[in-house]
Length: 261
Image 1 (cartoon, rainbow, N blue to C red):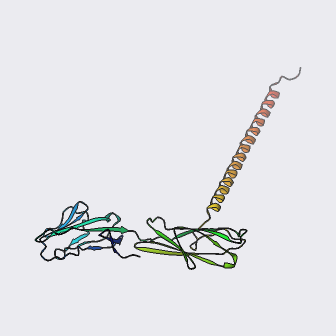
Image 2 (cartoon, helix red, strand yellow):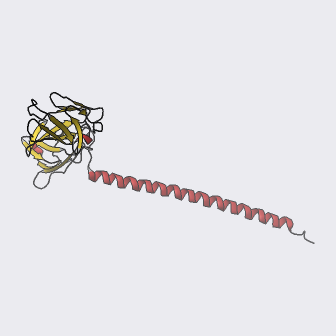
Image 3 (cartoon, helix red, strand yellow):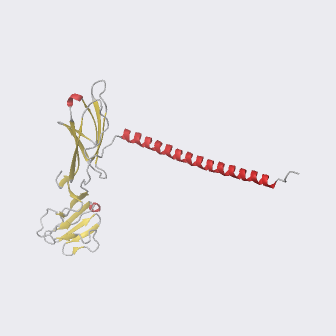
């Protein structure tokens, strides 16, 4: 994880987590300062001698030290990211100081690894397909480690042989304020196939869609069988009803016929 403060094109960039506090300092001498002001974007936040402004964007979460001229903000949110400007003067104007504050969410969810491995090909190698995911977080850097080798990116394609035995694949997902690790162990053999992550969350996309299609077909067949059975039941019921009516009509005709003379 990088330092909280770094330089970018002559300006300080400060990285903090959501919920942290930050103290903004100009790093300029405070002796003899007659005027000083902190601004967040175009909004004034604090002025030497007057204190915090009434409409500053950090109501209830900000403090201004009138001696050190530092600005402290608590309970940081993602919306607090932005540029701060400190301007001051003594008996002469001094250059302004610009600070960029960037707030990040730490990676809080467990990593999910999707993995699939082919059977050995004609060359004797199995091809491993891996994808590491830290959703719903963005701005995440992924690094895969296999033995002494490292690869960048969330996806990895790698070849292993049966004689390699169990091969451990480790995914490192990080941003500037946190990191997470997870591992997957795979082996090349004739009965290899899709596997899940060590958290039980992985799956093969091919098998997923295959099972989904098969499941839908099974549901459609069951619905058709139920519908067909219902139709047969209705048909039989109507047939029996019609037969009973015909029988009643025939009996009625016999009873109404005149007796033979």
